[in-house]
Image 1 (spheres, rainbow, N blue to C red):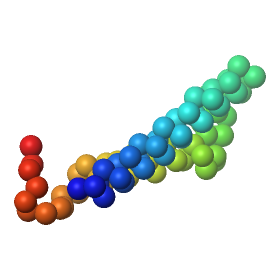
Image 2 (image 1 turned 45 degrees about the horizontal axis):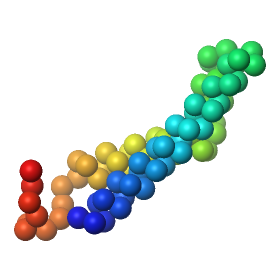
Image 3 (image 1 turned 120 degrees about the horizontal axis):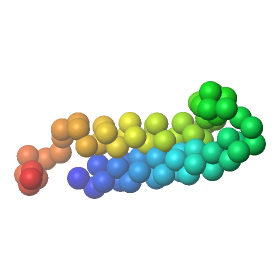
Length: 74
């Protein structure tokens, strides 16, 4: 159970870091970039891909069954 909570928090942290960078790169739109160039820039940055990796880790920890049979499932 604690391992699942740990991986969920790791995924949440990666998602948070990725979305902070995505929001901070929104300033490129005010510099004259159009939306296509902005998305192209975001896709190629590794720190913005942390958000995708974090969401995948969180979904895996939520939806993959496991653990002991003695756990309380609500």
